[in-house]
Length: 92
Length: 161
Image (tube, rainbow over all chains, first blue to last red; front, side, top):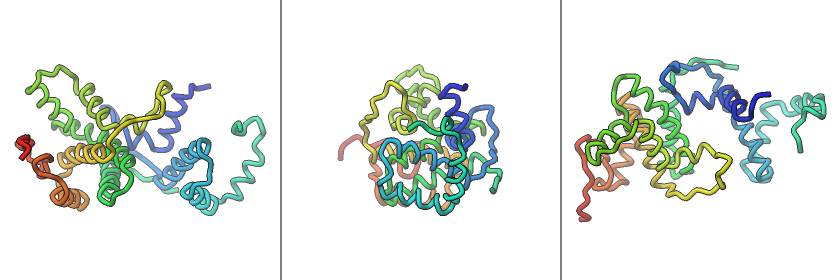
């Protein structure tokens, strides 16, 4: 299993976060991104951690959750989640 | 799904434009610092790639001439970013307590100015967001304290008058 730090870096690359805040000597000066999808996913990741710390009662959190339910087909996502085995679900 | 190619300059310019938009409209200063700081990491490297001196290098050169500071560009750059709390706003290590003490207004302004200096070196002053920020500076900043025209010969007026 990869260490938390290297897996976090992998996710940051996958979300396009690294491309937005790092540029090394040998990196290409162009990058291929799905901005809309990656922006949404980066927000979902951050808000998931925010909710773990502060709950989901603040207005901006509720608005974003509502937006994702409507625009990311919340019902289909929940149906998909229902089929995930208990041992693969996030710990409460 | 809409995957497209973008230049790193586009990513940096968009982040800097967002930082400036937030700043001049009174938006969140922490977000300004994060956006301008992230943009500046990219802009600093792009300036180096063109064979020019970036903002950090020019400040380091001045510090060496004035005080004989012996530092690498990386060390000096990290010191500047730490001064503006750019790293504190995007990283948190295991041993940190979750508190920082900063002047959000000053740090946000300085983070924008640092990134803007590098952007202007790469792309000039013609973009609307650049012109808008120069106009904002002329209206809101003290020309004795801030180099509002980005004149390379400018020095702050320390007479207190």
